[in-house]
Image 1 (cartoon, one colour):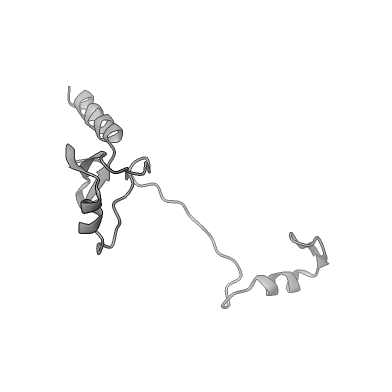
Image 2 (tube, one colour):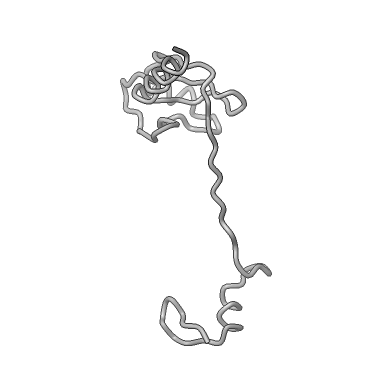
Length: 110
C-alpha cells in the first residue's frame, strides 16, 4: 500500500503505478549535464538591440533577446556583446558578461 500524494488515499502499489503509466513506461529519469563554454573571441560592441535588430532576426530559429550567460533580457538601445564558443556557435552576451569573460581571459593569459 502506498499513499497518494494528491489525495492521501492508500492504494495498492499495482494501482498506483498503473495510474502513472504513460505509453508503457513506468517512470522517467532526468539527468542534468553541465557544459563548459570556452570563448574563442569576444566582440564587446557588437550591435545595439533595437526593433530593427528584432525584425531582422524574426525568422531565425533562436531568438536573440537575452544574454546567453546570465539570462538578462535586452532592452531597446542596449549595446550587446557577441562571443564565439567554437562548435557551440556565436552567442549574444550582455556588456557585463562580455567584459567579465574578457577580463578572465586577460588574467589567464598574463
